[in-house]
Image 1 (cartoon, rainbow, N blue to C red):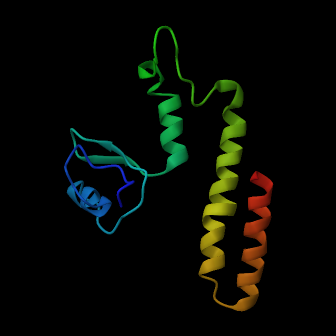
Image 2 (image 1 turned 135 degrees about the horizontal axis):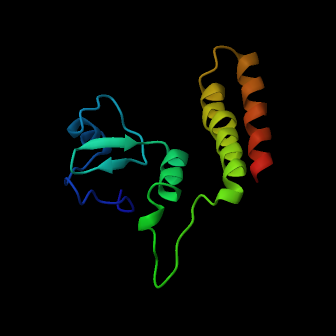
Length: 122
């Protein structure tokens, strides 16, 4: 797709190829936090990556003079974690539960719970 970000590190065309280069088989998900020196996938979970950027990588986050970007402020950390857990469990996994249900009743239950969860974050 023209709108996709080009791999400027290894020159790979597909995400799957980046994972394979790093020794990870059968994986195609994004985002990817990648250690390019060791060719290691550090994480592919978005909330975890943002948490890392907001904690251990915070000293490298200056943006302009005396400006620090705080993606995981201490005062909001528990609320961020709570919302991330909800989104992961009820929305991300909820979509799979609805889409891959074993029967109609399970599908309808998962479908209703998924859209109820979407309404909560809307």
